Image (cartoon, rainbow, N blue to C red; front, side, top):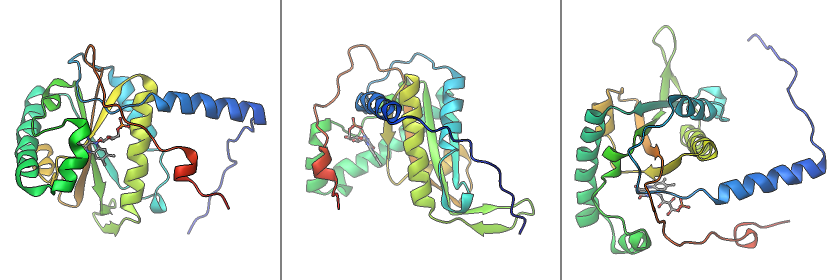
Length: 220
Ligand SMILES: Cc1cc2nc3c(=O)[nH]c(=O)nc-3n(C[C@H](O)[C@H](O)[C@H](O)COP(=O)(O)O)c2cc1C
């Protein structure tokens, strides 16, 4: 195997700069909230492309990059996705979800109706690849695809938020209908849909809180 290395592009910050940067980023990220009411205003294509490229920089098992993103702005396709998603969500809310699960969802006032899937200007369907095909069409298993695509999706959401767009992480499971509608191969598993756009006027979000440092961390 041909080992090729190059110098790391790393510029050390002073401690003050690091602390300032971390505080600034934390304050930005605290403002990210899941939005369920979107305006139909279109969004700059370059922002979406850059957010996907950001996701594509994610660390991942063996650098197999086991992800594929489908950007959907076409109204007819959004409508098809909404119809299929609402069918699954009806089943979820009426039969599939446990009482405990429905109870946990109460604060978000969600139901089987998903108008944002048509109204939001852009849906990004994230697919996870269980294997990849090389140039000769030979299959290669991917490593840690769930962890890798989870990290990439987090970076995608972060990039969209940082650029000034709102997002909704949507999982109308099972999501196999996405393979059919979006003509993706079977070895790609739908991971989730990132709905993105501008929040509608006067959008409100549930009043929830996040755990503090002590609640989520152990220092040894
Ligand atoms: C994997 C995953 C799946 C989610 N699925 C849905 C969904 O299908 N519908 C929805 O309205 N919210 C969904 N959410 C959003 C969560 O409800 C939301 O992130 C959580 O309530 C915390 O709120 P915040 O994002 O505003 O901090 C999902 C979030 C994650 C991470």
